[in-house]
Length: 183
Image (cartoon, rainbow, N blue to C red; front, side, top):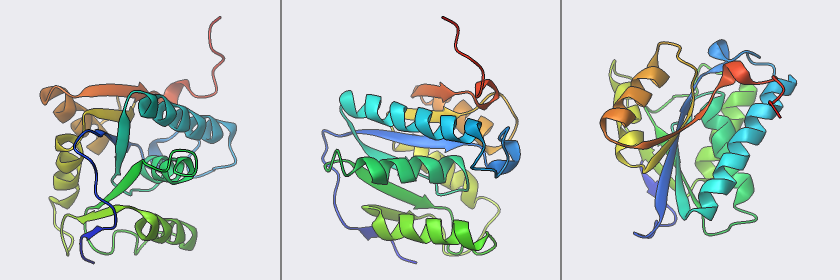
C-alpha cells in the first residue's frame, strides 16, 4: 500500500488525533449492540463536533479496531455536514486488518477508500510499527482525544507521549460509560 493524498489539509486547520482501546479493554468488548458502545460512539461524535466548532478540521486515526474505527467512521459521517473536514488514516503496516473479522476488514477497507489522506508507516510488520504510528499521531496533532481510563498498554504510552509533547488531551473514560451523569 502506498501513501495517498486525495485532498490536502490547509495550514490553518487544527489537527486532532485519536487513541484508545481495542475491544478487549472496553467494558462492552466487541458487542456494539451494548448501550455503552452507543454512548462511546456518541461521545466521540459530540467531541468531534465540538472540536470542529473550535477550528479543527484535520482528524487522524490509527485504524485499530474499536476506538480508532469508531472515531474515523464518525468523521466520515460528519463530512456530510462539514464537508471541509479531512480524515487521515495512519496505517502502522500493510495488512493491518488481515487477521480481523470480515466485518472489521470491510470497515477498515471503507475507511482507507474514503479517507482524504492515507499514511503508511511500514510496508511490513515490525516490532516498532505501532509505536512509530502512535508517535506520528501525537506529533501531527494539536489535541489528542483519548478513550482512556488508566489501563497499561499502547494507549497509556500514547497519552504519556502527548503529555510530554505538551498536547492538549481530551479524555473519554470508558469505565464511566453507562453511569448516570450527576445533576
